[in-house]
Amino acid sequence: MNQLAIAARRVLSIDVFRGITIFTMVFVNELAGVQNVPGWMKHLAADVDGMTFVDLVFPAFLFIVGMSVPFATAARLKKGEDLRQIFGHVLIRSLSLIIIGVFMVNTIGGYDESAMVLPIHLWVLLMYAAVLLIWCHYPKHWPRAATLAPKLVGATLLLVLWYLYRGNSGQGMTTQWWGILGLIGWAYLMACIVYLLALKVSHAYGHLAFLLLAAAALLGLFFAFDSLQADSGSALAVLIENNRNNTHAAIVLAGCALSTVFYNDTLAGNKARNATLFVALSGVLALLCWQVSPISKIWATPSWGLFSVFFCSLIFAVTYYWVDVRGHTRWCQFFAPAAANPLLVYIIPYILIAAFGLAGLSYRPQLFDAGAAGIAWSLAFSVVIMWIGALVSKMGVKLKL
Image (tube, rainbow, N blue to C red; front, side, top):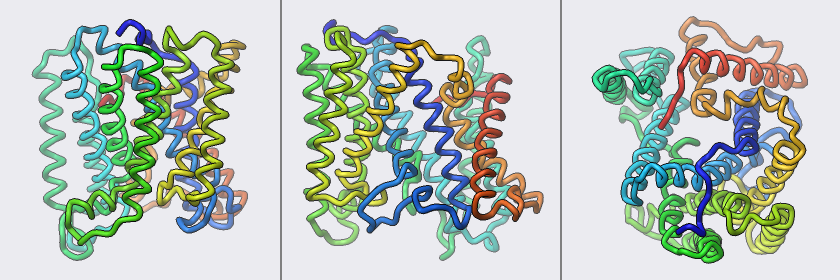
């Protein structure tokens, strides 16, 4: 097991990459509501063979989740936890992401406000209040009862909101899709199962090979399920419907592999060589896969997944060189709050929009609904969200799953 050693620590270049990704995610989410902007600043349609930088944001987050897994696992092993305890933590964290993701999806569409007891904006604000109560990081010196009480209040509030929700057809909440956080939750769970199994391989190179082969196998599963048909409601139909989870988990595993290549004591001898090989290999595989699989973020095709791995590994390699090798770190402070508190920064825009909606106000003036003005607004909006995230973090509010 010592050949698999990765020090339990924070890595500045990974934090910076995470912070940049969160900032970009806030920017593109806001830009999605702006008209008359260049096509390369929007998601491409599912049937268009290609991707924009916008289509790279979500897989970048998956990739960073994967890069963090070896360090988080090392930290828990250092505390004396066994693999079963670590898996229990992974399971709770995954379920938390899935629950929040499903609730968020149902706030975006599919609801019938006229049939609900509460206005949808108030429902949304209460939902995020419950999320904060349940998953907020409370001071360690607080007694157990003081931390358990708000969590129970939050869980009760979520159940009440679930009961009060009404959909367009009179139904309650549904998994219209898992939402961004839900998809991350499923991919994280699948990849962590593989990573924990890979720890059984005692040799560093065998461990790395296990991760890479598992990622390839998941992409192979995508092709296998994509060619199948099944009766609606059957177990096979469910697997086919959630086929994109295989690609998402493969991206997470690629992130695990890159951290292993960079920071494993046995493998991390020549980082420049390792980074070059990893980037080049992922690029070649992406080009080869593109010959048989169109690029589509919506469908989560293997070629999109491999190109995402290529670009993410390239971006991280450049970030690592600039930050960790050259020591240019002053600019990193802007991204620090999002890196340390990413989930909170991610949900702040939704909280603000719901608050403005409840007050009957439009948070974005009509002047900024289109064109260059809309792009400038989206950029400024993202900066403000980062500042708010920094302020709230300094106040001690932190979401920790």
